[in-house]
Length: 201
Image (tube, rainbow, N blue to C red; front, side, top):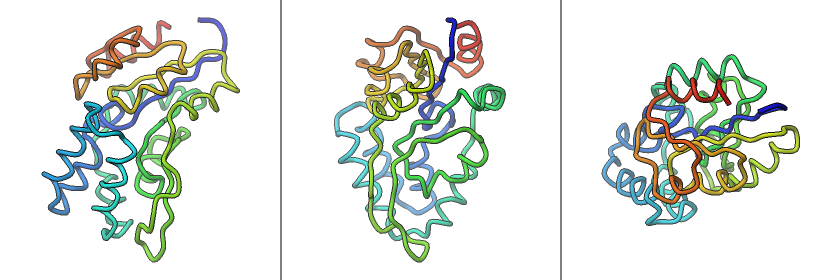
């Protein structure tokens, strides 16, 4: 493709090798509850917004700095992070996770993040102020680019795939949901293969 290309990555299970919210839950003895909600959301059984509000409520008493410390230890895919590092101005992370929680990853990766937003006070989450619409995020990015390539795996990624020129279903951590597979141009199973594909497009 000729022209300016933007690469829009989902975060959980795409750039990260672990789902972030279950990782937090494991550290605060809420793993089973969060895992059930996460799996149901990934499969599209529970709408993302409803599920995310419930998950945020479960974590509302945990200090923000504790959540950030946990998230800072989440394992990232080395091939994908290297690709992002060499294409910083073209790469975007589009995640429903909260800005106050994923700040360490945003700093580590160095590219622009689109996130959900929260109000907070005294190191505690107060309430959700905005749940990210991934489709709107991609439309905003498109204003400065000729082509959009999106990479994701879950039901929550469908809106950004609908706005993309090329959608890549990523099966590195989870099997992508069927509705995402149906609208994808490519399916890849690991970070190395994904980056090889991105370099050819």
